[in-house]
Length: 254
Image (cartoon, rainbow, N blue to C red; front, top):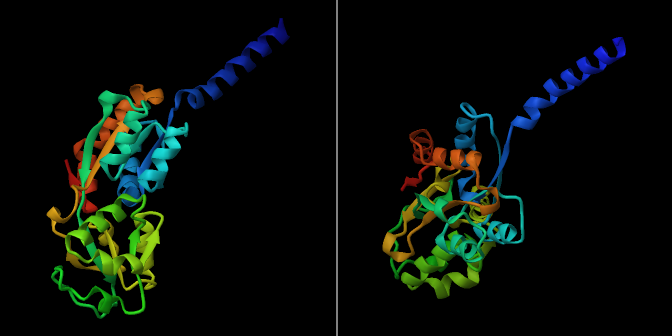
């Protein structure tokens, strides 16, 4: 009898100890690299009122979309353009009714903070080659990075693409392009307005909105992960608390 009582007590203790671990959910959010700082703060704010643990994975939208299509364990996906969200939608891996446009952004030309270059007016007569000298223009790789594609569109609109293309320093994502300018490894870079909040760079010009496709950030739940916890996180991303954080980092809230 005594051994039976001890066994029951041990079972109860083990149940209590493992209960919280079983009840706490973990969600993985795959997000465009340009969201890194802002989304980290949003996730921290979410954690103040929710027990769900959030793990963020940042990279270029194209890289993340391909990983999700191959079965990567993502619960939510935020892209820096519509194309890669469409790609996953067509692949049938998204909870269709969960998709919405979350944020917007701007495209800017930056230089290192201590650069002697002055603000300019972007037009076809701008001497881009002279501004670069023997160096290169830092951009997200236009072949697959959304920020790079917007940059290519804008440079084509300005009729500067033939000058720019052979002088590109192609980064794997927009944050990589930002780092090249922050370190002074590139005298100029094209990034999002939200990236330009870095204290180590300054904005020389903003590209006209009409020079490139709208910079939209769609979000959606991965179909296999659709559930109450994912829906709670999705709702929080559009809530006033999250909106205030996104605006503070230079994003436009849709």
